[in-house]
Length: 350
Image: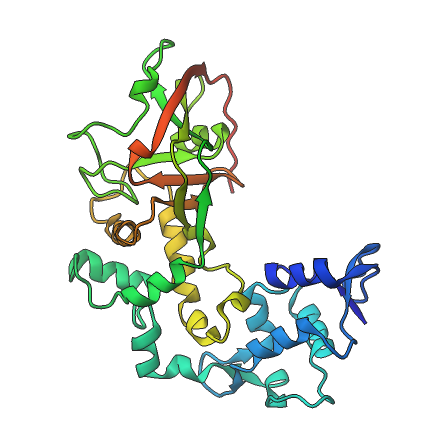
């Protein structure tokens, strides 16, 4: 039996298929003439990895217990298919008649991770010690703002190392400003606002400068939320030294197989990571109150204290767009500024 690269979303497993696979037809998703991997071989690296993850689950009557196929579909983003397709592929990867070092009931009964119900484990390994992201946000806003005992700094720091990203010197970034007229702004006016005009954002506290950039000029137009017939100045920046940033959008999507034997710790924090990343990526809204940005500012200040140059996150206003909040604008130079007029804007709605 052969599975193919299209059967998986997980980068580690896809790399295994790329490196060790051959061209052929997939027995599971019916893809043709594609890179496939023979899972019937005695040495099967994909089966070993899937089994290592499944071993953290056990049959359970806990209220959060679910079928394994649903957990693998909704929580781990390893497989590309639906629940039934996952069940079929997992059954082939981990056949019940083989000598598995695992409780075979996990394939047929509802399961959960027992450690996720252990208070000591939650307190030691949870980045917000068992709170949801919304509960942690409320505690930052209304209970303990600066030294929050519910934030597990050591655990969060260790996860950041998995999503750090480097930009080589001379990489181009972009920033846009709506201009009052067609003259626009000079390149020296394209940096963060001066002291006294630095309003709070999702990454920067009130009064502290952060330079919000994007990796392409179309994304900055979306992020600036321009309207038809606006004049907009787009500044082109390049970094003067290599940058080390945290890709916060990737923190919930990193392959679990990169964490070695710490699947339980990742399972405990994955939902919080996802909600945190979504919150940082949300555009600033006119009606937001001053407290709304405190939780993400707290996270950003911690990332900054760990020696990173900025936080990278996906744009919610342009599919595929990448934004970068740079803590120190002296690390980049604006090399060019051009002013354009917006001639047309299209809106999507639902």
